[in-house]
Image 1 (cartoon, rainbow, N blue to C red):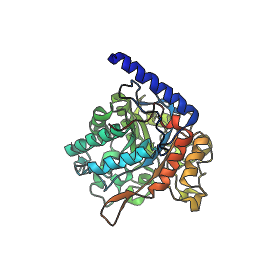
Image 2 (image 1 turned 90 degrees about the horizontal axis):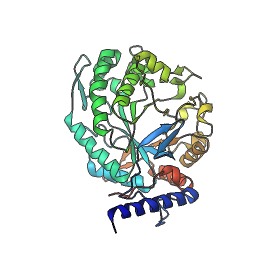
Image 3 (image 1 turned 135 degrees about the horizontal axis):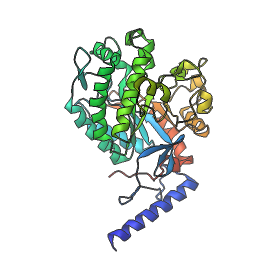
Image 4 (image 1 turned 120 degrees about the vertical axis):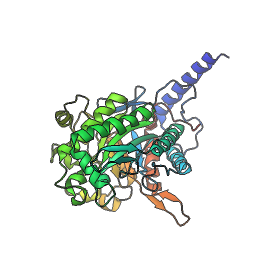
Length: 391
């Protein structure tokens, strides 16, 4: 049998299996032997794109059945990555039909991007790239997407080492441009071709930089922050096809219904003067302390929550165990959000150090229950081109 004929057979079988799961659904834990998988010879691309308000993969809709595994020990990717630990984590995620995880590739600064006292980029730790090479190879191996978070409010938080330098950087458009044109550009050039880099989250919860004294309240403005987002987004769009977002801590600064959308296309383009300064989707966070001030998002549409109607919208962080406050289990959150037109949910899971000296993910079973349930009812959207088997 010729190689070309084998390839045709593989593609036909893959398509037939995908159609069968469109009708029936499926879960990795069912033990079924006829699950759709990505053939070694398949030509389908795993690259995620946006069409209107949907994520798409190879012309089919994708739903982010996700979670957060932000770090193992903090600043893992600075030369101290535990490759075996992350391999085990991705194997576990894949087994429970989690198709995307959010990881902080830089938790608070100096161990990765080293700055001068002026805020100018001095150098990038080469061990960072070595660790990320391993991380993205693992993601590709298991077919689990990564949302890579590049910075956080922690960079600016006193007394973290280097916080003054990061404040100087973000207050200067020139220094912001240098950061984007060095670190962000190199990140794109190195990993933008990896189809399992789902998106780049430019900053985790910038709200606290603006609101909290220890992070720079009164010193750093939304103009500073949003210029940073716009410039980084522009560099990303110029150098790779990876999607861009900002993990806003709350809807307050992500909606014209409240204090204004500080990451709107119009605002980012106005501040930077760059046409490609925009986000591809919104990913606000939601915690129970917001109840009574902001609507509970899971049982309403993104528009009713206060977001625009022009982009996909996901919940980028939410607890998996606050049902005593919200009245919703993690499984409820995923199910309700799916039914209300959200494009994904990502629970937050801290690493927990056990008595045996190893880390596990906080109440992982609650997240797995939710993601397996969605895979049962919407397998074709969790795995639009079939589920990849680890090589």
